[in-house]
Length: 110
Image (cartoon, rainbow, N blue to C red; front, side, top):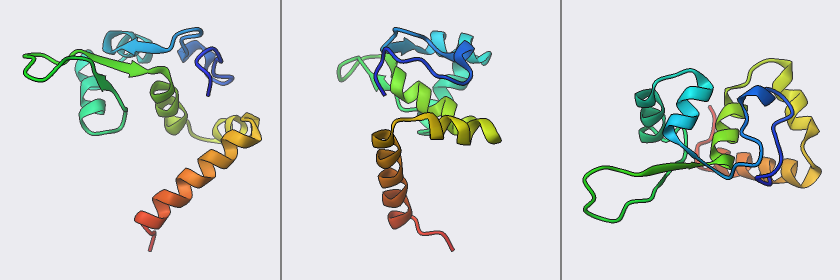
């Protein structure tokens, strides 16, 4: 997904024209605490980049817009989610399918 594109659904949760976000940006937009976003990063639910070098006392975390958008889409429920996926370009749908197949190959469902 190109950084200049905006989410079609829940556009009020998006950051049009942004490519990188701070933890504060995401926390304010989602209406959660700074600490909650940090926990999402620590558990791997939201992919982040640590911009500090080795030995830094405190992490300088930035969130790629693609990671944020993937998190929002993943948390969608109901018909809006399927409508959103259907609205994606075919190439993106194929990439998603390949990702899902790779995940299922590593973690087969019973």
